[in-house]
Image (tube, rainbow, N blue to C red):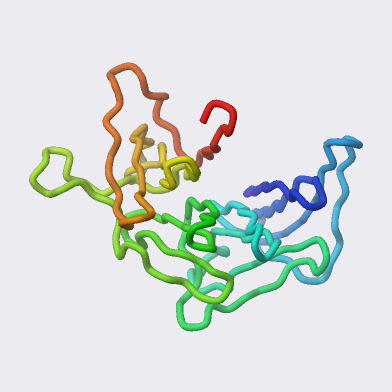
Amino acid sequence: DSAAVSWDPVAEVFIVHEAVAGGGSTGSETWTFDPATKLWTRLLGTVAPPYSLGSSLVYDPVRQVHVRVGRTFLTFNDPVWEFSLATGWTAVMPATSGGLVPNGSAAFVPSLGGIVIYAGTSSGTILWDGVDFTTLTPSGPSNPPSTPLAQVAPQDGGLALDPVRDVLVYFGGRRGPTAANETWEFDLATSTWSQVMTPAGGTPPPTRASSLHFDPVLG
């Protein structure tokens, strides 16, 4: 199973897209959860994204849509699926690029007016603006080759925007089958990644398929 959740600040409900695969078949459901009434509501429609592996939902406040980041089952050449409560799901084919990358970690970045996606070493860092993809870095982040830590960052981790410093923070993920507990930052001004060296014993345990969120109170 694969589920993705995002918050709709206009309707003040959570949007949940859940896809299942098994027994030779796939399914897709979309739900809302209202924290005020504690009610779940299934949204019925004829169009919905197919099964997606390693997907997430990211809200774009400029266009007021929820963008699904991930890939469909058995293919990488997919449209970008966007959802709004007014129109439901819409499949958007990128103007010039291919489909979404697998296991992408994503966050909306106001300064760029779109959603930044990091999807590991082969796909790099890309921007989705609602029309097309723009490559920000052609490959995974790395330290300068002269350092002992020269390596590309893991994939399938959590990504969040620090709006105070205007940087993206990435944690966890995996290198191949092995979970990681590395911390990286993406400088939006220079489009460069760098690894953050944390004190010994001051890092959470390795984790994969994780999420990361900015706390505006703690900063």
